[in-house]
Structure formats: structure tokens, C-alpha cells
Amino acid sequence: MAPAVSGLKSLVWQKLKSSVFEDCKKEEEWKVMLLDDYTTKLLSLCCKMTDLLAEGITVVENVYKNREPVPHMKAIYFITPTKKSVDGLIDDFITKSSSRYKAAYVYFTDFCPDNLFNKIKSSCAKSIRRCKEINISFFPYESQVFTLNVPDAFYRCYSPTLERTKDKDAVMQVMAEQIVTLCATLDENPGVRYKSGPSDKACKLAQLVEKNLENYYKTDERSQIKAKTHSQLIIIDRGFDPVSTVLHELTFQAMAYDLLPIENDTYKYKTEGKEREAILEEDDELWVKIRHKHIADVIEYVNKITKTSSNASYRTLRGNVSISALAQLMKKMPLYRKEISRQVIHLNLAEDCMSKFKSNIERLCKTEQDLALGTDVEGQKVKDSMRVLLPVLLNKSHESYDKIRAILLYIFSTNGTTQENLDKLIQNVQIESDSDMIRNWKYLDVPVISSQHKYPRRDRSSEETYQLSRWTPVIKDVMEDAIENKLDSKDWPYCSQCPPTWNGSGAVSARQKPKGSYKDERKSSARLIIFVIGGITYSEMRSAYEVSQAYKSCEVVIGSTHILTPKRLLDEVKSLSKPKDMVCIKDE
Image (cartoon, rainbow, N blue to C red; front, side, top):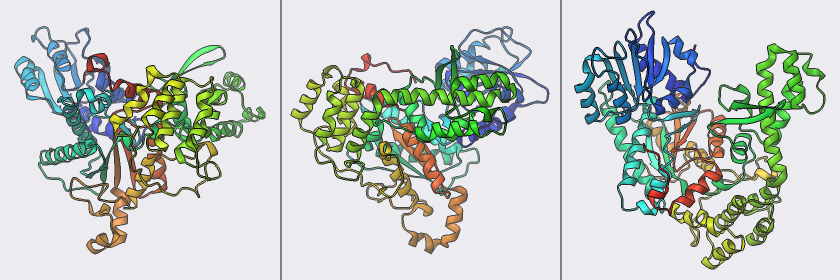
């Protein structure tokens, strides 16, 4: 049974099936599977245990842990090419008489360094039937979203304490190699471009990706040089749009992850007096349908689907559906338990979000939108941003984090402020201990004191929107401009030959090939891949789906080192000025 997922997750699963499971499959032969921490998470994102059973896997074990030997069974090792994982493999085959398994089929996520390969060769070569690199070194977080799971990349890329160390170059190289495995999985050799600006990070990473793409497609299994495909990869620095990282979002997924303590996509809630947990994932069709809707539309939609169900018992519910009423229905209707339980989860989630919103956030949102856009609900220009900000700072019920977010929006909206004004704001709001959450934005080349040119925005005045959700992430403008060939090549230079489909001028395409056929080509094969150095927000993830929906001719895939919430980002910005030994950085 194939996993009920689509897009990136499905592609990764299909690649694993063909490169790993079908590579060593034998009729009616069961195998043990050994994973490390990285590959455990990777597999959990794209398949279930039932899918592994269908591929002949009877047991899944951690390669780091001590295990009972099963000498009559063969083992598949799907691991990262790291010393710790390789040592775990070697320990299982120290001597032939004490081998834990009959034989080993070894699959590395990406390139295995020569020193580790030689170590395996000299220790347990006779026990290994296969040893391959399959080039999947990213996480398919959602159908159109990927991460490299490098959360410490933010510190390593932006901290001034690492300015003259090799750390920055090393993490850039790692990111480039991982991005290439994404392109390989998508079977793309895209044109690579980047946003030029005060920072050279996007340029450096783009050049590294292009170089690694050239190397990869020269040395792939077919030993053929793959020409550029009709897709493009755009690399952007996190400082490009600071506003979207701190604004309160009122679409369901972004709002829930911002306001509620959701860890590892797990939402904890109470129903009928019991503590319960729910994983917010794409296997839940209701979650996929509502995650990008505005919270007001979510509540209306969940109530509507509950009351319009074909079952007569549903129609006894009148008015707004309560959680307790749904709980009673579950007892009466066991056949509908799964469907109703999902509705209970999302009603709880929506009510928890609304509870936070009504208590404090609602008052903040108007201020944030006015500051972010520079205009009020009527479209009138905000003449005095400080006057808009002050009520938030004087309100004692607002948390420090929310006041810092408002101050940052004020600074972003005015393209920086004076040193004197900044010092006064920090002192009057009594956030001296957290002042680096504001000051350290300079390391992302975002103006805190001085001014800087802003990205010209698309006119969205005719679009219908909620008053407290008028802001649109800048990255959505970039996606739309890229698809419409409106990105200026001076601001968005290519590191490589520009694919003809994206050359920025319809005229050239028309000379090379009729316009109609290029449109057909784009429909069937073009992708726009966006990569942001230093984290992406849930609102930016949403933009990828919205643009793909609006422009049927192009699928947008977005990714980053990791996924951000406003609080997490502020904590990371604060840590930038700390010495490396005082910051918790995970080993790669």
C-alpha cells in the first residue's frame, strides 16, 4: 500500500522503493531495517509501518542501540554517512561468528567520505551485499515544502562571532550538497539564480549549488551530462523579508504554531476531561483542506461539514457545533469515529487559537497591519508610525515578545530608526535583557539604524482580504514575478545558463520555439524552487500552495534550513551575538 501523500513525500517514497527496497527484494524473504536518527525522521515523513511491511520489512531498529542478534535474517542499513552510524554498522559484523545478521545491504543518504568507506571495507566487506548512495539528504516536510534540518545554520550563517572562521563556508557547502539531492529527487537541473543585495550569502550559496549540480549530473548513474531543465531555483537571504517573520498570522496553520505550544507537529488538547495528542500531518485530509484558511473561515467550514453530513444523527446538531456534542456522537456512531475525531481535533485547535486571539492578539493585529503596510484599513497612509505603536507598548497585558514584535515592525516600516530613539524604546518598555532580539537584525543586513531600499510590492488593493490579514509575504510577489518572467535580471542574476522557458522575455522564447509549445512544456514539467537561507515561515509555505493553485502551469516548491515561528526566530536572533560555546548547536 502506497502512502496517502503526494508531491515531495510521494517522490521520496518512490525513490526509496526503487533505490532501496526493490534493489534487494526477494520473494517471501523478510528483512530487518536499521536506521539512525536522521533516516528515522526521513522515513516517518513519507511512509507508515504498513508500507514497510509491504516491502518485506518485519522489524525497524536503531543502529546506535544494542540489539538482539537475528543471524538468520538479512538487514537493510539506511543511514547517514557519519562516523557514528558507520560504527554502528561495523559493530554488527565484528567477527563472522558473532554477526548480528546474515548479511547487510547498506544505503547511504548521500556521499560517503573515502575514510569511512575504507573503514567499512577493511572491517566487514565480506558481510556486505550492497553499498550505495541514494542522494536524499533533505526532509519532505509537506507535499511542496522541504527542510534541510539544519537549525543551527542560522547561527553559523549570521553570527558575527564566526565571521572569520571556516564554519560559514562549511555550512554553505553542506546546504548546497543537500539542495542538489532535492533537485536530483525531482529529476531537475534548474537554472540557479539569487537575490543580489548587501549580503553575499545568497550569491555564494547559489554558486555552490550550481557547481554541485554540474558535478552531480556529470557523474550520475547514466554517466550523461543532463541539460538544464525548464525549472528554476531561486535562493534568497532571510533578511529579504523580515516583516513576515514577526507578524501575527491569522491563517490556521501559521496561527496555531505561533500561539500554541505545538512541538514536533504534535498538538495536545483535552476532551471529555482527558489529555489527548494529535499529529498535524498531511494524512489528515481535513487538515490539508483547512490549514491555509483564515481562522474565521476554518470555524465556519468545520461547523458546516459537521452539520451537512449525510447521516441523520449529524442533523440533530443545531447552531454552532460543540466539542461535547461531537464526543456524544462518537459514542453513538462508531463507524464515523475517525471522521468525527478529526473534527473534534480541529474544533479544539480552532477554539484554542480563538481564545488566545480574543484575549490579547486581536488588539495587536490592527497595529501590526498598519505598521507593516504603512496604510490603514481605509487605505490612508500612516503619517505617524510612533503614534500607532505607542498604545501597544503602554498596554501592560501584552507580553514582552509581542511588544518586541511590534517595535520591530515599527523599525522595518520606517527603514530603521535613530540610535537615540531605539535606546528610548528599549528602556521605556523595559526589555534591556532582550534588546539583542532587536539590535541583532543588523547581522541579517536588515536596517535597524540606517535606511535601505525596499523591494517594490505588487498592487493587491483589489484582492479581497480580512482587515486584520492585509499583509502578503514578499516571497509571494517573488513567486508570481518569477512565473510571469518579471524578475529583473540585475536584481536576480543567474549563476548559470537561463532555461529558455524562464528567460524573462517572451520574444526570445517565441523565436526559439512557438509560444504555445513552451506553455505546454511548462505545464508538464516546470517547477519553481525557492530556497531561503535561515528559515521559512508558515505564511511563506502557504504562499507556495496559493501560487501553484493560481498558476496551474507551474508547481512551486519552497524550502529552507528549518521552519520558523516568530518566538523561535527572535530567540535565534538574540543568540547571534553570543560566543559559540554559549549557544546550543547540534552536531551535524
